[in-house]
Image (tube, rainbow, N blue to C red):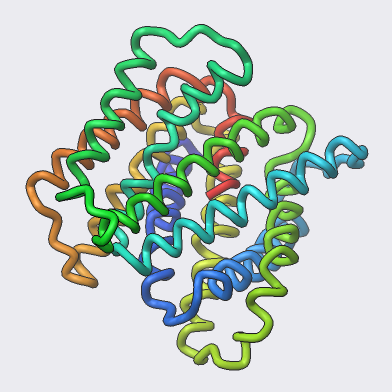
Length: 297
């Protein structure tokens, strides 16, 4: 893979990640069914990639590794469920922008958990995200679907931040594809009791959207990121990853006529700027960190 094709693969991967909310909205199924199906199809796609394309040897997992993967799988399940609840309630744009608040949570949690001093530029990042979220919601009203949906998506961002910190703790030893596959197995097991009673009612067309979500938006997208990191700098990959909300909101605008207001566009721009700044400040120097973060979405 040349640098040019690797960069193209990165953008395709970011586009696929961005289509997550779109396929979630197209599938007329509950969030529990969508997440279970996504995880199940992702396991198949990641297993295929690991068998035929991955060059990283799998590691023998220790008890601590299993505990971390189980915890990260539970966090991933919560992150996905809350995101798709937000999509169903408030639409793709609000759900995607609310989730994009995760860099602010990461800054705060790293300061609390690892007792790291929060720098001035990180404070600016938190402020940008906060202002962006205020602008995205026209009026803070708990009786409004947009407000409830935004709160669910912000919860999704918080869980993603916790998941990213958990992944970074183990990303130095466990290959990204192996970790992603194990996490998706945990997700499927967590959601099976809730999804099983509803599986017989899922329409064939909805299974198509869920399959595309699991295979392309999870398995293929993550595999493209991992393959591209062999050629592309981690800093570049992290910034391309930040384009995900742009792709998702644009496609939702075209498909569902979710016309964003000027206020929402300004808020979204602030959040996306914060993501790019965060990518350049932190994990952009570590390819394993970037791969682990991509595996979580």
